[in-house]
Image (cartoon, rainbow, N blue to C red; front, side):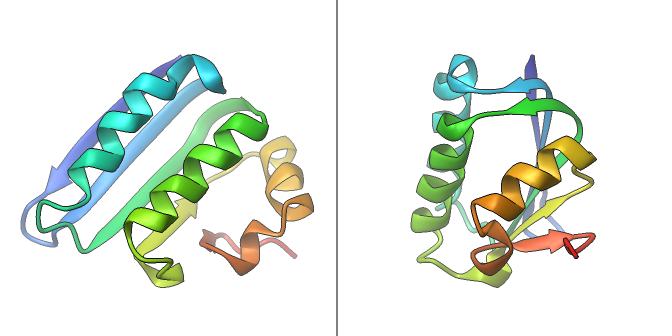
Length: 105
């Protein structure tokens, strides 16, 4: 599991890539990400293309991140999630709380 971040200063977008398992084991690393949201960040993109598994603690971490951007649905985009992860996001109704790319049908 790994969490990588990149701040695109031109667009003020924080890009976050999570590989492997998105669960409580990355809690400390994810907490550091939430602390970066106040530094002129206008948007956050969470790339789940290399995420194989997601549990309820991951959902909670995403909700905390959402609170940091004042519940602005457009401020956070979750992209490239695999089918298994998409199912979890759909069951949790995260398509109503976040921008999903591609959208879950």
